[in-house]
Image (cartoon, rainbow, N blue to C red; front, top):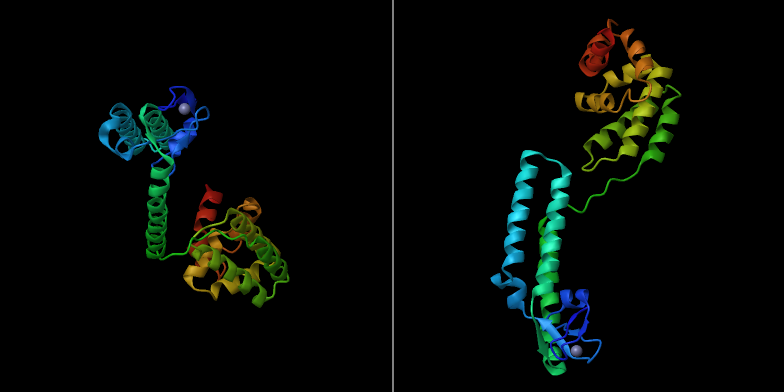
Length: 252
Ligand SMILES: [Zn+2]
C-alpha cells in the first residue's frame, strides 16, 4: 500500500495509483480521499531516474538483439520497460483532488477515450489487410487426400490445388502443411504415374507448391520411388526440376 496524501496513511493500492489520472483518481481505503498522479509526472521528464534507466536498458537490450537475435533480449526489453514503468509510478507524487474536480475532468476523459478510439479505428483501416489468421483446413485436406488415393486425375488435381492455395496463404498453418505433405506423398506412393502425370499438367508455381508439401513423413520410400522416375522419358525433367533436392541426398 502507498501513502495517501490526505491522511498520510498507507491506503492506496499500487495498481489504483498506476491507473490514476485526474479523471480516474484513486481512493484511499482509510479516509476515502481522492488523489492522482499529475500528467506532468507521468509523461514529463520529471521522473528522472526511471526514465533514464529505461532508455539505457531498452537501448542496450535492443542493440543486443540486433547483434544476437535471441528472443530473450526482446523479453528482457519488455520486462525492463514494465519494471521502470512500475518504479516510475511508485515514486511519482500523488496529488489530492476533490470529487467535483474529478467529475469535471471525467467528461474530458470520456472525450479522450472516444477520440483515441476513432484514431485507432482509422489506423486499423489504413493498414488495409484484414487481421489474417491461419485457418485450419486439415479436415478438407484429409478428405481430398482420401479421394485422390483413388488415383483419379481430377481428385489428384483438386489435392494439388489445396497445396497451391496453402502456399499462397498470407499466414501458414503447420497442421495444414503436415496434412498436405501426408496426402501428397500417400498419393504419390499409391499411384506415382498418375501423380507425376497430373503434376506435369500444372504450372511451375503449383508444381513447386506440391514439392514443398512433400516427403516429410515417408521420406525414404518417396526417395527410392522418385529415383525410379529420374530417367523416365516423360517425367525425368519434371522430377529433376521439382525433386532434385530429394534425389541428390539419396545418391550422396
Ligand atoms: Zn487517506
